[in-house]
Image (cartoon, rainbow over all chains, first blue to last red):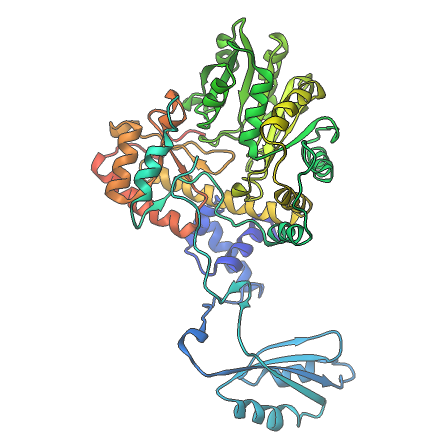
Length: 164
Length: 385
């Protein structure tokens, strides 16, 4: 359904983030109009969802809190896990939500300003939901790597300037 | 014997700050972690002794199956493969084994800086045959035949080429193979850039008709696996010459470092995980960079492999060395003058695109500025395929 050129464009964008159309066209040995058409198609098909910067907030000492909450739920007849998932991901503090195999059903990732905010999210918003059976909350202590990007200092180019 | 022509620029460029270097003949990737980890684990487990002279049998077996799967060439790991400290040492033992004093070797130029000196160190005489720019730096059969004499012992080929990036199809190579048969010559085929072929599938010279028994294939881990500093290569050749090369190797080197060989083993086993990704990335950068050089007024043929652009600088009226030196001093972009790769490289410079897209874009901005002073009148039609 998608050509190898289209897939190559997606892989390139996933790795590099936003790049100018002209540069994309040159990298893929095609023209700008073709790249624009591919991008439009990906957006229309809900495949290309947007571009974001990867920010290392640890560097500027912002004291926000990220929590990973394992949630066991009772699925609903006919709608499975989707209905409760929808009720959870609508909360703006939820930054990610996954349906998991294994010991629990949903993994909720939330970013909040403080431990208290996480606590009140769990006790006031998440636990009272009818389908939610139990929650286990873990706090993130440090990010080493996220989405393939290292959060520790990068290795510089160790090559000499000129080699044969 | 002169020191390598690259050396002088190396010394100059090393002392300068804020240099965008296109002078590097090696990948910008770091060796994949699983490969580094495998070597680390071997150290931990105490694999610190010599290996067999020809290399770990396990590694030779893996190389043999790689040669079969990837290129359709069949070699006996026990008698036809030698693991070396880089393709450079592989070339060294090949020439020491092949050459008698006064034997001539046809060297396809522009060529990697070590070829000539290695042949001379082995007592041979270099007979350069130039690949012409108007032919996309592919080798012309008649040019080779014109250079063959009674003393010609071997032809040294390197496609994809360092420094031009040129490639040859199986059909084109067959014409050279026919010459080798006709004049009873050995062929040393440096296939270090084999994996980095972007447009046409790579043909190993040894797989051509009648060539297996007269070809020494030299390959290694540096380019395809981003392992330059490990110094790991190998030869694939019929037993009759492998036996002789092994003597040179066992007295001169003993064996390739054992820890490094364990890294190579892991690299081959996990090649599908890493090599295609790196190749795709080089291809994208090639596409961008060649177009950008042509747009900047430096006519550049589209290289089918390796990671080098070889633009013509003739219309600037400068020699290759003057161009490279002024580009370095005025705009702090390091390229290698083409004459470092033989007389036929004069009028060109080698620019490696094995660096980040951001660095390439910065290099192009600087080259653009630099080229303004030459009132260039060339157009994209000057570029050759």
